Image (cartoon, rainbow, N blue to C red; front, side, top):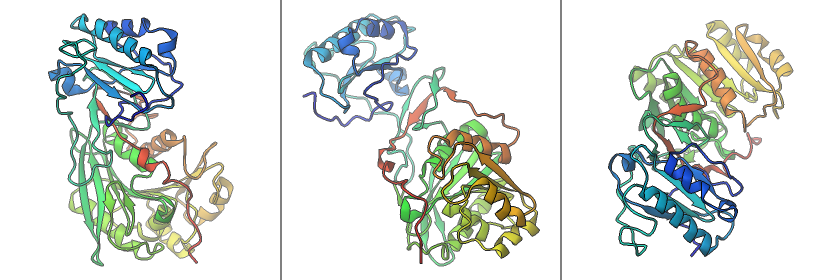
Length: 409
């Protein structure tokens, strides 16, 4: 039984060596304190609560979780019994909590013990989880809402903050339909708009590449920004596949134009292009449009951009910022200053310790982006969020970010 994988999505990424105890209500904290060293081995207490269970639910659920080792039956029984006993007698001010034991996830709510309502191990039917639905396939695989409105959550790589999200479709001048998403602040109008152009699709680039995914999941809430992401022609992600085929940055000019046109038609304000790697070449070649305020380039390789195309930006006077990783594989800060000299207003920002794919540097990138497009927002951006959040399933992207590009010749 303990070696099986359950179908319930984990509330937070399970780490087999984690023993961290998050801040919980007294009853759940007491339950954790009564677990012995054996039960705590490769286990943790998490503060992850479904908002609609807090509001409506009065039941106990037991969920399986795939971790790295088999668990023992006595560990499972002991954890369930201890947690159930304390939750059954908890005060009204306590928060609902979860315990992860071995390969199992035990969650309790008021009204039932660890063995279910009838003491036989049979549990009441699950209530429907509150989910955020999009038109089309959800990028977060139907994320579940967790937490209370007054709960403080640490913002992690898979945290989705509140926003108005809509699956969209772009139409190109050469007749293709491109899949995308528009994320808007939950309340009020956006202060600015990011149009994201992703890395090379033949090597894992897509609208869900991690910087853009985190921008869409965080910046509407943290910086009052609109984030428009889409898959260029022939590119596929969990959102779906855009029509057409990869064209090496040639036919993609129609894709860039379609995104700008969509943003203009929907009155999205203060429009900036955020390009990454291959997307920076698209930005420099096709993004200097009257409807665009400026652009931010993430690890630009300057691979296919010509000097004539850079001179177009120079003549426009539009702000252009290039974030250059210290250890980039293709263009490092000193060379970048020389290559971008043709654009007098270009701002070169060296990023210490960073590499081309920005692994581990997403927060630094988002801070620099917000400084340019929405300078009234204080940076660094918060690392916690007070209120309910969702958690996206990013496991589908584990093998997608492998390289920046390969020769097209």
